[in-house]
Image (cartoon, rainbow, N blue to C red; front, side, top):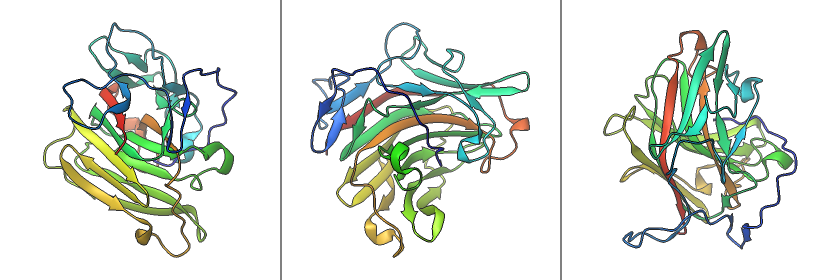
Amino acid sequence: MMSRPVTRGTLAALSAIVLGTTACTIPFGDASAEDTRQPAYFVDEFDGPARPLRGAWIAETGGGGWGNNEAQVYSDSTDNVRIDGAGHLAITARRVGDTITSARLTTQGRFSMTYGRVEARISLPAGAGLHPAFWMLGDGIDRVGWPEAGEIDIIETINQATEYHTGIHAPQTSSRRGQTVSASGRPPSALPGTFHTYWMEKSPGRIETGIDDTTVFTATPADLAADSRWVFDSPFHLLFTLAVGGNWPGDPETAALPATMLVDSVRVSRS
């Protein structure tokens, strides 16, 4: 999921930001006392009444193809992104006349992590022209651009979502688009319309991603070309996008809209 660098104005002061050697976070919730996993320092379960998006997430807006010739215009309207009142974050792509609108959410400037485990429980949509993704960008994206900042794709699917796609994008001297190291395949069970946990674990010199209890991808500096650079031992922030059309899924004219990506929870914990 290549990103067009986005320049944002100064964010409102965030008194809850905590600076540390391995993370910059807003503690967003508490892990359950019955949870035996490593205690989380960021939890969002999207509970409560139906309402507009708020908290750690920023809805980025605009069109312009986003580096992939995508068709959608990203919006912050509740028609495209909202808490649905049933415990989910809902991201919806719609067609209004000749315009396709959707949503792109980021925690840039509000939450990032260097090492640990990120997981989200997501129900992915399926249909012609759709490209949902849960991914991460290096915090230096506005300063150094893409792919210099690095990208981690935790989960992407296209069209009918019959395969998963996951991987990393690293800067490479010989390529303007950097080096892609990735994995794709058929999941053990169907992905569309069913909640699965998509996760990423990041430790010094190592990235792993998985679906539910299965690891599907591992990368280390040894997987990079000689002229590529490992930039992943630095803070990265989270993104959700539901793109339509573009270089990968293809013609948006036949896109199955409206389509909704549901996120039940997001959790980040230290390894």
